[in-house]
Image (cartoon, rainbow, N blue to C red):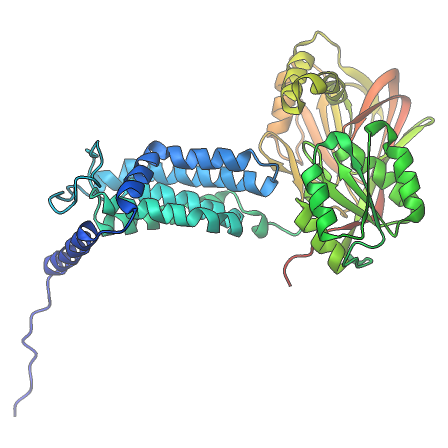
Length: 496
């Protein structure tokens, strides 16, 4: 009895590697000997421009210079992804595989780089950086990623075309770059991974062409392009542009004839519009037009496209509104209300902002306020008298993003996010410790709680109170409370 026996010897790992390397070399020769019109001058220059990430840092700077928060986030994510990819390639990749650079015999002199790389060939650092930046941008904004991707692909191709890398070096480098972008997203989630900030959903008037919308724009907001874009998308909308001093009067006039009250400006302008909309029972449409635009961004409107989609579809949510009262002084806040150092900082910033700009004025104000020789605010808080450097109350829970309260995921949670920095020596150190700490902490330096209502007594006359970037004075008693789901605000719903 006989049996068939397979006497073939399995191909060794070395033989398989040799075959793959041979294929790699043939692909390299194919690219090196092929002539593409215009590429001999373009690709070497593009390859050099990506040295040390210069091309990508310039691209990130251009994105950050726009007024689009999405573009700025995309730029930051792209740079972070590039940094991680570059660090990984230089510390692990090139030290793990000692592969020599390709021979340049088949590469025409016109394509060769003036300065040949001296590091090992595997993997391609330029390809990793290009792919990491493009993938990072795309994870935050697909349209921007689509614009950057062809340039990144051209940089990767240029590394083979100029003869400094084999195709496998480029492919592995690009894969590591994309992996770095996803690793960054694992640490810092993109907006589409975060909880939707708007709830509960409510039906609002759909305005396909803008008929019924009266939008009041603050001329000092400096966003004429956004206003023109809104007018082009909603041609029947009425737009009123006015000076800051005339805003409240114009909001009242607009409310008398509008089906939907619109506003373009910063958080202080939006606050004034919300007060009028709430009193007249009108839904509010917010077009970001200030420096920070906390409320608009938290509710989910980042640019004119977001607002137009929401208005055309009639998509809106109901949000809580904060309310403060102290004697005859009362008002609303959509974002924050605070006593102590922060109102002084806001007051100081307003003094300088028109001279040197918003961000420089904020830095200067912080330095002046924290270095000044002052005493903490003395109040009666929760039944006992205590000195305070800061009492902060947020309309909804702020989640940590950096050293300051950042974004809110729920604007209808019925809670005030209260943070207190106790008095004592070194206010700057105490404020920094409170900023670094989580939203629910207690220590001798600071405390943070979530409550539906807050009452503070014993406030000295003339004490400054800041609310949504505006400043007023209070004394005696101060009561903070929530008006649950009081205001209807347009915002685009997530993709259905």
